[in-house]
Amino acid sequence: MVQPYHVGDTVVSRTRDHTRRWPPVSRTTTRDRAQRDVGRYVNDDLRERYFAACDALYAMGALAVAEMDVETSFGTTHVYRYGPDHPSGDSRIPVVLVHGAGSCSAMWYPNTPALSAERPVYAIDTPGDPGRSVQREAIHQPERAAQWLEETLAGLGLDRVHLVGSSYGGWLALNQAHRGADRLASVTLLDPGGLEKVGLRFFVWIFVSLFATFAPKALRPRLAAWLEQPVLVVPQLRTMMHLGVRAYRIRRPAPLPLTEDELATIRTPLYLVLGKRSLLVHPQRQVERVPRVIPGARAEIVSNTGHGPQIDHAEEINRRMLEFMHSTE
Image (cartoon, rainbow, N blue to C red):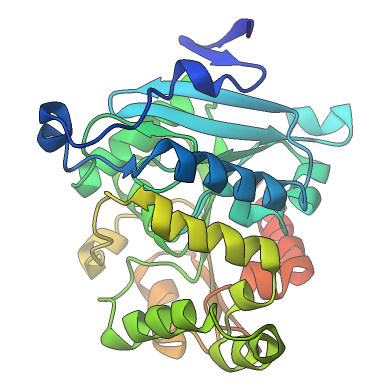
């Protein structure tokens, strides 16, 4: 039996207790048909296999000191807490990590050791994407996405955070900076959505990358270099992504780009990191545009990478993120 404890007004648990949250996945029912806008697993077997793949990836990063379930208006948000290594770090503003689309917080395995060495880190599983969160209500509009994240941070008892988002998580972080920045000490965007309309080239890259994961093992390093796709050369990451596509039906808001007027409302210290060969955005265009539109924003391009700078150059990106966070304090 898991013993709960309280953070703010939210009951969370010190250890995992998935059985109480995961009813068996059955064939389509009337209730299922009424909740087509809610992300869900296809069946119990694939869900458990996906969790096992996630756990293999979590094991490559820092050891979580706690796992928490935060109740929100949209369902249960599962959160992993890491570090810090020294008690003095507990007084520092924590980091909150928001993962990319079609993934879960296991994707932060290259980053949790360095970040949590210095300050508390919370990695969130986004409802509507595969992970251990349980979505019960639709989150399609940007304002509802901001409400969900605000409720999650409040439930964790976090009054001030450094918010870090990658790809789709970058859009969520950017959206929060525009719509609900009261708790934000800073925002770091890693090759994020939300800056421009997603073009065909990005979807082609996603499709080709997925197809390439089935290539013979000997060819994957060359394909990974050509596609700028670390999924191909990290077996645990490849397995997790494969199972996520099979196991889960994704439902989440479309990452619509913010207008220049909306971006101009942002006053939170902002750090934008783009891969030089990113296909999600036009890096040179955005590294010039964002500091012009958002007062005080810092923007940089990282060479020799595409859409995953925090994976391809983890040590360097970790260092830069920590330096930026420290500078805002």
